[in-house]
Length: 92
Image 1 (cartoon, rainbow, N blue to C red):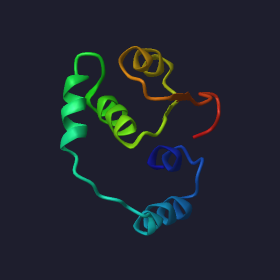
Image 2 (image 1 turned 120 degrees about the vertical axis):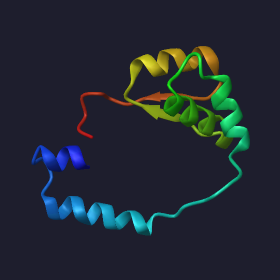
Image 3 (image 1 turned 30 degrees about the horizontal axis):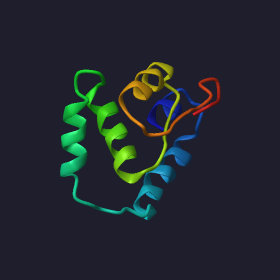
Image 4 (image 1 turned 180 degrees about the horizontal axis):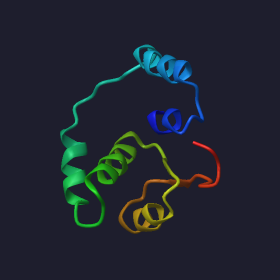
């Protein structure tokens, strides 16, 4: 949101409201040891951020959605998680 606000794609007031709205997001906590261990196992093929998201998708049994075609291409080699490639031309 900061990038879009800085580029003046989003008014500052709207960006601020989006940040405040984060407080209303439903958050579910769960033990993360298995996710961290899986991310560690993926460390040689992914950035740590990508590895954590991939491990979380596996853990939750949910698809990983990404605009990163390179990540998607590598992920199918290292996981059975469903990978959804988002249109990289669509606005964020």
